[in-house]
Amino acid sequence: MTKSGRSRMKYVWAVAGCLVLSVCASAALAKEKLAPKEPAAGSSEAIATVDGMPIVMPEFEKAARRNMSGILSYFHEKYGASQTSGFWTSSFGGEVPLAVLKQKALDDAVRMKIRQRIAADEGALGDISYSGFLRGLEQENARRTKAVANHEVIYGPVQYDEDTYFEYVMTNATTAVKRGMLADLRSHAEEQTLRAFYEQHKQELYQTPGSARVLSLSVSFLNADHEADPAMKEKAAARLREAEAKLKQGATFEEIALTYADSRAARELSFNLANDRQNARSPVAQTAARMKAGETSGIVEENGSLYLLKCTEKTEPGSAFSRYEDMRDQVEQDTIDWQYEQRIRQKLATAEIKINESLYEAWNVQN
Image (tube, rainbow, N blue to C red; front, side):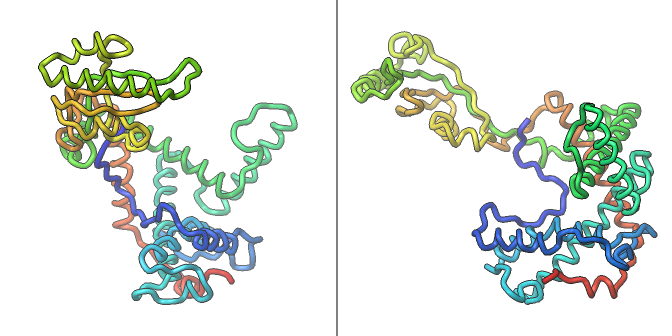
């Protein structure tokens, strides 16, 4: 279900909805410059450790690639900067893009290693080292190659690249961890836990998205070829203006429909006010969203018909909370997601992080 006011617990960088072409091109260029290369001497050296678990340079660089477009967008939106010569080492309002990128990449790499550790502790992952990951990738691609040669059915690509395979592995591992957490929840006072979560988080998660319910009269002005006919449109408008006048004189909407509507009955329509994208395409939905209970609209045109609406019920966004009973499945999923993030936060708070300062300071976006 769509929920208004949902506030997810994630570390999010501001990303522009639509960037100018030069910034998009810059992001693509930067990504290319950080593309994986053949391992060089020392490439497996740890740039940092998390509770003794190494984060090697390829893992750090993957995190940097994932965040580069977000950093470019951030500096473009905040300072109007684009990736020109010297961009990464220039200062904008006291912020240096390279320093921001490195810190974000390190934060994300540390968080990812914590997630891997949790998955390993739950038996959802085995070797969480980078070399172990590469062995797993090689074995999986070999398996897929053999399956294709034997005309067996495989799901997904014939061959994984590193990034796609890593996403695949981590998605499956995280799902397995959460499945185990859900089993534990269901075996230990689940209802009490879920209701407590609902009460604690209903302000940000379970406010009603808002809805409008209307009665509708419609008259088409399309001819037999399904084309708009101006003369028919004028007649349709005249019918609805007469219907509107009858309503003002005290006639009920249902009575008016018997005479003036195409269907000879008032249709009931309901709109979820949180469906902005869908409602934006419907003048009827937009009109319903503006109406108050008991109010009658003017004439509304949509898809070859004219409409007259009466709002019978209106719930403003955020004016109430969805019932726990209606949201229980979502509350259960939200509880598990929150508990999983809490495990990560707790481990991050106590983790011993050591940085190889010489490697960290020397790392730069390649020219």
